[in-house]
Image (cartoon, rainbow, N blue to C red; front, side, top):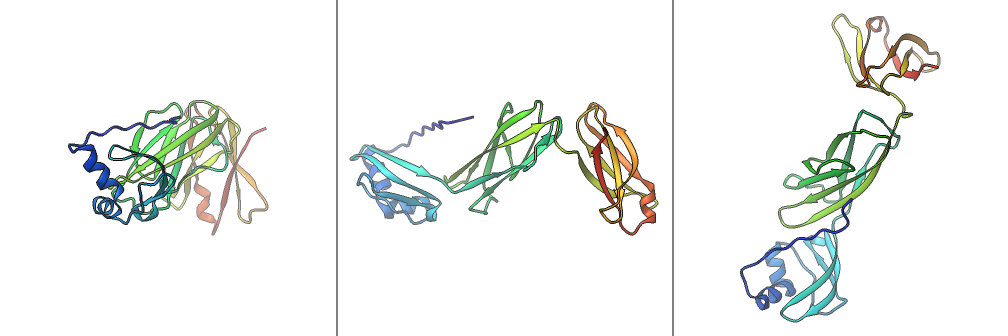
Length: 231
């Protein structure tokens, strides 16, 4: 997990001129296109991009150096509340206070995974049980950034999942059962969520997924499904 971000940019202008432009609120706002609150006094508050960036002036060397603390737009990682199944794809998302992400670039990184560009949602495959840290960095063209960190738990005892639900030809019903590889699950059905009856038992293959079909679904106005691990 990254803890230090270092970036260096060389600007073709004298240090004195850059210092004067940066520390003057009007000139600073003309560069960024949004109101800025800044002064050359150590301890003075700093605010830019309509409050999306806040901080304080920590140190000033006139005409040569400005050191600031920065805090960017709030961002939060939204991860599954329950542990994810080992070997199955895990999807998480990032929520940002500034919802205008049409021009933003989002970089994702997870424990043991290479950084990747993506959207608000990020999917990765788990290869071991335990906790995975996840980071997202949102970058806007105007220089604003938002960071979020979170974690996802992965294990073999996570509940099975029923996905890709769809009607099939003839009025039947099918879905994908995802669970722990080589574990046996019983698919049960109910019409009232009280009485449950088994319709099929499957042992999942090595990839942890199998398609289940219920041709009898056509005979019911409503039918609920669940998967339980066989004893």
